[in-house]
Length: 453
Image (cartoon, rainbow, N blue to C red; front, side, top):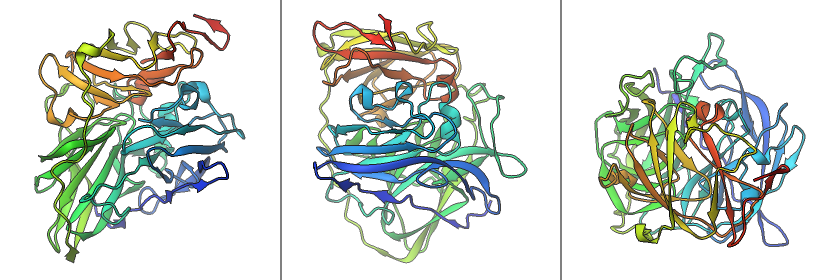
């Protein structure tokens, strides 16, 4: 594999401030064709273009609005993954946008700086829509002195995805692996064989595993260490030095890598240690992702700050309830997804502990809409260092109990649910998903589409 294609940097949308002071973004889902692999035009879907979408960027406290238009031949939706917002703005399967239709969610950003993302969430078709190319980053941005922050120069978004391309270069899907489609073609920001020309001593990589099923363990070919600075929901308390970092589909991390003038280094995925090595799940694969080429002279960079953020650690004593979440086959707690069933009713502002486990011997992860959670423990042991921050998606170690603690928001709607689900998208589409509503004191669950609960 030759790495001879310059890494595409998704264009930034900072939004347009309207007369009401809202920061307005525009996204159009459309069909297109893109050169994912050199020399082949692949039929793809994208937002505002042929494949993938722009990076949306806003700040904590901003009132944002997104004008979403669907120019596809079928219904889709846009879910703001990792964002705290009202359920009717969440973009899940209850907010589908019909072909030719539009949707205009708006909300106030009420969370710290973080690398979030957006992608479709249509009922039963999420894998197909994401796999064809509908995805992009949503950066909640706040300057932190000492962190690389020039977008596309020393602060670089990396959407990493695997694809299966057939002989004519078209996207193929396979039902062979129990986790969903596993592809041999690795794309970074939509192209295979990408290189990035680095001009600075330090480069911040915003990593998104945007694959539908493949679990990635990021490392470098020379096994150099790097600084892990942020999880799904924002910055860690302090930089953490490590040589590898595992992200399952939907998870994000920010890392900072130090470069020497004139060197080339390869970002790779290494075998994921200790997980389901019997199942055909791609976890023993090793492959190259992207080459970083350092210029002969590099701009000097500041030392990373010793303290990155203050984290409000939630206390188990404050939890008002504990909910078991047992994932197996295509069900959670023995039930497959039903659009008309509310599985859990949660009081606004309350703190809860969810005990999540993968019980069937296959890889699963778990994503909760509307909240960032903290990992209390895994089978009673303290969480691994890379899990000690705000998370919205977690890879589940098989047969182990993961105690997650979270505080729910103040947005209430007894009639419109949020989702929780496995983020291996085929599992989600086939029923491994449940629904919860957030209600005010004294409120019960309402009606979904006229069905009473």
